[in-house]
Image 1 (cartoon, rainbow, N blue to C red):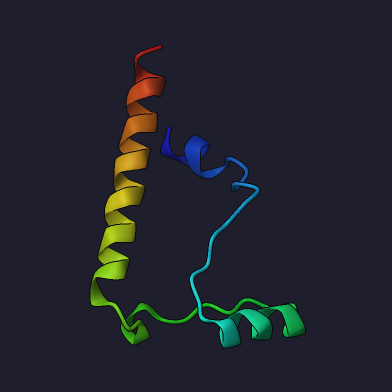
Image 2: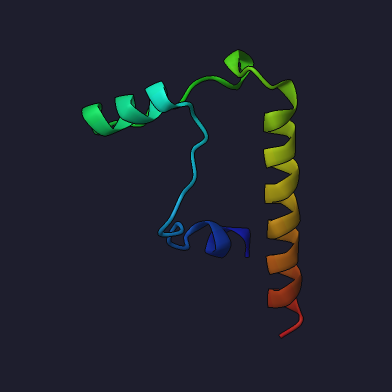
Length: 67
């Protein structure tokens, strides 16, 4: 069941928070880079993302199993 959820198409829109310099860098290069979580400036960011992903997956699994 989890593999079915993971095989779904990603959302059309994605959000990235940055400053003006970063924004123009993305536009000029046409690239968006990712980094290791250890280098993030907000230590809670990754944990919040994991919690949110877990919650969403649990909701979807619950909906699928109630059919």
